[in-house]
Each structure stands twice: as C-alpha cells, then as structure tokens.
Image (cartoon, rainbow, N blue to C red; front, side, top):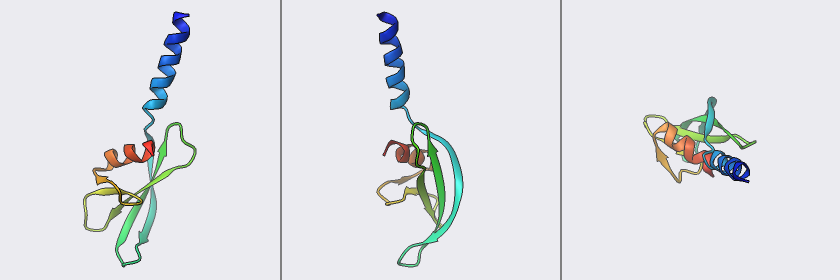
Amino acid sequence: MKHVIALLMLTLATTAMAGPKSLKKAGTGETADGRTFNKIEVVCSGKKEPRTIINFDGDRKWCLADESLCGNKMRVAKKACKK
C-alpha cells in the first residue's frame, strides 16, 4: 500500500510541474496597429498542442500571445505551459 501511495504522489508531482520541453522559432507577425513581433512555439510536457509566446521588435520582454503576462522568455514559457 505504501508503494502505491508513493507512486501516486510521484505521478501527481510530475504532472503538476509541466513545463516547456522545447522552444522553436515560429516566424514573425504583425498586429492590427502595425507592430511587428517574433513568435516562438513552446512545446510543453504533458500537452499535445504547442503554445505561442511573442516578442515585439525593439523590446526585450516576451509575452503570452494574448499579452496578459510579459517578462523574461523562460518565465513566460513556463506560464504558457500552465495555461
């Protein structure tokens, strides 16, 4: 019984820490107001669909595609995987 509980706890901990497995350049785009941005596809562990993060030209910050969170690239990629 102890082994089953330990295995269950390990499985839950692994899925709770889903994060980025790889980052791949996905081209560029342009917003409706004319701002150009670079896109990166984030492949997340435990997720089938990749997530997209963006970086506007001339800015060091990366943002979620909906611009709800911006920050350094890895922080934003991890947040994208949790959504």
